[in-house]
Amino acid sequence: MEEGARKSARSVLVSALVRVRLSRPSTLLALALVVPLGLATAVPGSAATRRSGKPARAALPQVILPASASAWDLAVGEAARSGLGRALGAVVAMDPRTGRVHAVVNPALGLQRAFQPCSVFKIVVGIAGLSEGLITPDTTYRCHKGCWSWAGHGTIDLRRALAVSCNPYFERVGEQLGYETVQRYAHLLGLGEPSGINLTGEAAGVVPAFVRPQAVGHLSSHARGISTSAVQLAVLVSATLNGGVILKPQVSGPEDFVPAERWRLPETTRFDGLAAGFAGAVNEGSASAAFDPDVAVAGKTGTCAQLGWFASYAPAENPELVVVVFLRHGSGHGASAVAGRIFRQLLGGGAGSTAAGMP
Image 1 (cartoon, one colour):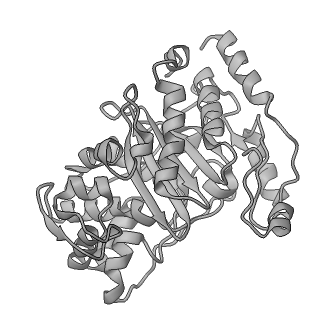
Image 2 (spheres, one colour):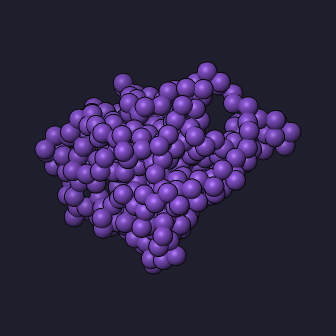
């Protein structure tokens, strides 16, 4: 990496630095060993929240970068920080092929806490249905009144169901699979336990031991009762892109990085049709705010309980960067807009010098 580019990118981040008092000093002191650049974050229950009675908007989110950050790491960190802006949320950016984490924006929300993943969990249900032979990419179900779109989506296949985030489609798949099967695939894909990232204070998340049969459908479409971190979802999405490898995410510079696998999914695991659905979400569906003619982005949105998610990657045809956006008070559509800004800054038509620094 060119030293000039590295210094330039670092100066942009340094100019945004502010000093903050952290609410969990012992934990975040350990994190500071790999945080050369720290930015402030507003948290629920802050003085601003108490005064206004409304959720606080983040002042400037904290950014974790590798201690020996490359020019590309610095560029990703700045794009993620500026893309999130003052929204209360988090961003995790990772290489889906190796597990090298380029940046974590606001680890208090992206790493140290787990939240309901909403419709992003439909990825797990889709993989389970495909792998168990229950569905194929061409399997159709009838979506009528009762979906988030009250008019329904009509008769749709897996690609379209992912693109528009159809609830009845995945509710029916989950009910036919049964919770034990859905639970097994959730664990196979790394949920319900720490990812093993080399940062302290990681939340394990929750995959319930038992769910009443009548609740399986809603869990399959909205992930009620399940909680995950943004880091865990980055690992999950990466597994759909790298041939089924559950990676150990690591915040590390390129020179001293050694990829680590936690496990490989069984050879019977199927991802057929997922990529087309993820691309459809951006091109015609729930993630249209991430669309850009110069950058082919793909991913899955999630919206529930005032939470917004977008687990995404680009370029869609040859993924090199996974970006998971979480919004504490937002929607999947809003999260896709954040990801769109990030990818546009890094890979868009005007990002020639930045994109050239990619590993």
